[in-house]
Image (cartoon, rainbow, N blue to C red; front, side, top):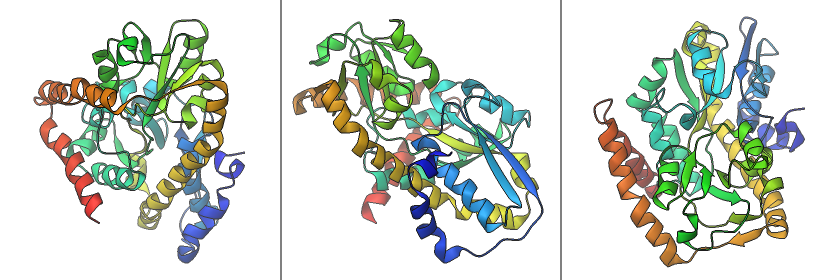
Length: 342
């Protein structure tokens, strides 16, 4: 059973597409999409798209998501797309920063992506940015739909870091610029695929893990191991989005291509609703079973001072020879400003 059906999002799907429920005729096509982990809030939007595509085409266009790394490991999904091993996949940008350098902008700390509506607008526009598109073209892939990951928070074991100084020496699973931000606090960053993090926790190889709050901590078993959680650190997020194999997409008849693009907005709405529903369920459990850490405004301002602009400047300098890093960074802020004025 898919996450979409398990969580009861069929009603949202029907309501959001009822006005456009016109049938689309075409040839029989079957697509396979590669995903790590189990069905969860991150996959709910793509499940909704797959269900609607099947309904609108009378079952002629089938999209099946293969979970648990059945088709490819989390770090190898881009390679699989390049080799035409499957028609689509999810990726997390910080699993392979060298493969998608422009995409690492999404993992920089303290970007203006905390509001869900702004986040959706910014990422949708960024998925059309030339540098973001170019990253994927090298892998015979095209950006399709953002995973719209919520702001990260950190869960950990042992003594809780009640002050910023307490992060010194902690081994924290955090990738990209978000990991750099944690290093600015004195932590040691470790980049692990989500599915490997719980095992590292259990074995004592990790002290803490940063994940999208709250759903991913539960989906990957971190909440079962943790003693404490941060409630307002909000250091940033990342991009675990959906891609299509470029050759497979271009081989589709035009009406199928149009249908897929038409459904992106609905898919993102379903994803964000799934995150919100998980928060309603998970947050009370966090408060009941773990120590909640709430940082002062002064601590948060200090964190942004030492891990915001310095991390941004370093990222821009290190990538300026590869692509227009300043332009990519500025685009995020420009689109956020546009979203706020609408």
